Each structure stands twice: as structure tokens, then as C-alpha cells.
Length: 201
Image 1 (spheres, rainbow, N blue to C red):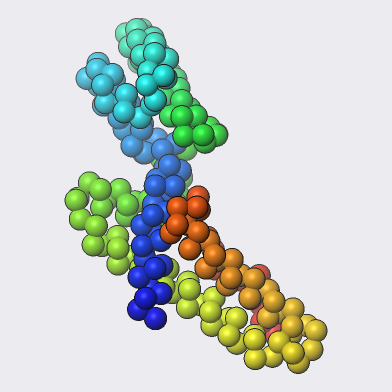
Image 2 (cartoon, one colour):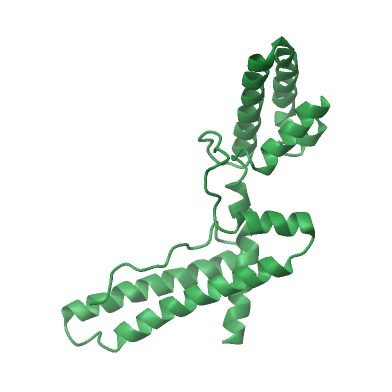
């Protein structure tokens, strides 16, 4: 069981970049934070790392326009800032091959693990995140395994029981398959949810 735990844990580590991408379209995310810093300093440098080299010209142009409009008053400055945030995030997302669906508000719930991942990066300490991920993944794997092990005992009792087993089997197999594919570099995201496709009677 120790070997399984290790596999699940390192799979989670490999999957973290995908989850962080989903955080980049939030007004509290790292891209907008860099944009705010750039506008405060009047220096575009902090945001350039978030876009591809071929997109740098468009960002510089948007930054120049934003600084100009910001001098026209408070309301104009607020609108200009939003324009720059949206332009930057849209181009950043496009550079990753991801769609832009608008800026997420500050009060929108952050995806599980994002805050912990950011904290690990800022603090320079990965241990807390490692414990958190390991515990969650091990618990999920145990839960799915327990369901399929239980329904397997009655799989041949009747058709309905057989279907319950098949649903649990498919849920478990696909979850584990996704973890191993991701560990080999072939997955894009971690299976989420509790995997319950039905409720046992």
C-alpha cells in the first residue's frame, strides 16, 4: 500500500501546473497581481514573463495606452486598468492554448489546492502541500476501492447488482488510469469528485 501512496502522491505533484493555469484568470491571481505592480511602477517588466515573446508587442501597446488613459481621472483609470488586466490575461491564456472566459472576481471560490500551491511557492516550503495532497488522494483512492470491492461481492446476484458493480468498477479503473497517465506525462488534469455514479441501496 505504501508503493501506491507514493505513486498517487507524485502524480499529484505532476498535475499541479494544470491547476495553477486555471488560477491565472482571477483578479487575485498572479497575472493580475503582476499587472497591478507594473501599473504602480509604470514599468511593464513584471508582466512580460506571463506572455510569449511574439505577444510582447501587443502587451507593450496595451500598457502604453493604459498609462495614457490613467491620467484622465479616477474613473478613466479604473476602466483603463480593467482593459489592461483583461488584455493581459486573454493573451496569456491564448499563449497556453486555453480559452479566455473573462476575469474571475475576487470573491469567486478558488479551485481546491490553488491557495495551498501559491502558499508553498511564496513560503518556499512544500511540506504542507505534500501532506495535504497525499492525504486527499489516498483517501479518494481508498474510497473508490472500497466501493468496487463491496459491490463485486454481489456482482453475480442479479442484473441490478451487476450494474452497480460495473459502475463502481468503471469509476475506479478510470480514476487510476488517469493518475498513471498523468504520471507518465500523458494526462492534462487530475480526476476530481468523489466518483459516485449511484448510491447503494
